[in-house]
Structure formats: C-alpha cells, structure tokens
Length: 93
Image (cartoon, rainbow, N blue to C red):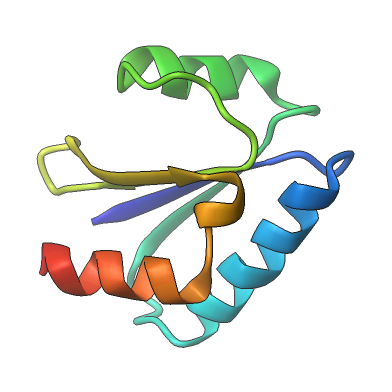
C-alpha cells in the first residue's frame, strides 16, 4: 500500500492537512510507502498523479493506492484528518 500526499506550502488549508498527515504517519508502520508531492515545486508530478490515477487535481490531497496500484481511497482539503486516514486504512485492510 502507498500513500501520496499532495501539498502546497502557499495554502493555509494545506498546512493544516500536513499537520494531520504528520500525526497520522507518526502512528503508522514505518514500512508504509509514502510520497510527498510539493505541488508548487513539482507541478509535473502532481499532474502526472492526477492523470495516471484519473483523479481531479486537488491540493491538499491524499491518495491511498493498493498493491495493484489502484486507488482505494482519496480525500482533499478539510477531509484530510488523522482520524479519517486511520479509518480509511482500517476499512481497506
């Protein structure tokens, strides 16, 4: 399983989402694959993620991918919370 977090340092909502993401990651298995995408510095990667997984670009945005590289769950903006991420992983497992 892999988690992609798309973030913008220019956005206050994204800053709040990053705090939630950091809290979530502190309590997870360190083997959980994680990719951080700075949408301002790496817009091409952000667009590639949106295109590859056929998901509308959002920032902030979290995408959880399965072993077959399929989208299992996604959230954006205020839906990115430690609680929602933990629940999503629990539901998926």
